[in-house]
Image (cartoon, rainbow over all chains, first blue to last red; front, side):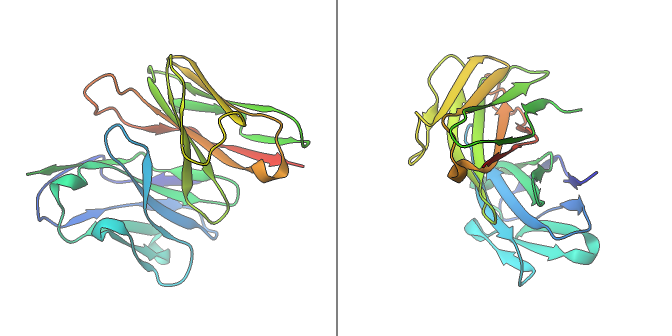
Length: 111
Length: 118
């Protein structure tokens, strides 16, 4: 069955640290990939998406992600995090007829 | 196992039909549920925020009379697409969390509903 795995459930970093959140999916076909962020009490917001083209995707707020097809991965990165990045991050894979979310990574940035 | 159950997973019906989609939290009380819609090749779009015991808050551009949301209990929210037309065909997904605690409750997603209006 198709699935999306986010390796880290809870990440704690200090401000200015670099961030990388892992995301792997299990599906051999064509996929569309997303990273969403959810701040406490709010709905999902799109950080970035990959449909085709350059596998290095730049999103909002300084985030980027790299699609590595051979590794079935779509890891999220940010070179220097801020306290305001404290939130939950979801990786999602869109297949032909549905979208599958990872279980999320809760990111806590220490001021 | 699944903590949010969304039903049905797929609906195909004729134009003019009303369709109800259920979103249930299975092992927690969901004070807030979100309903999203996804068009092909696009990201999720928030339609409305459903709060138990009160009226849903709809996003700009979403017709509240078209997309009726009822959050009658702490474990169930329903989205009814009234008099559906082909342009309502889409993928609908709900999410739920318990925000009455310290705000650190995880968000859980339903498996989504593929609605196809002929």
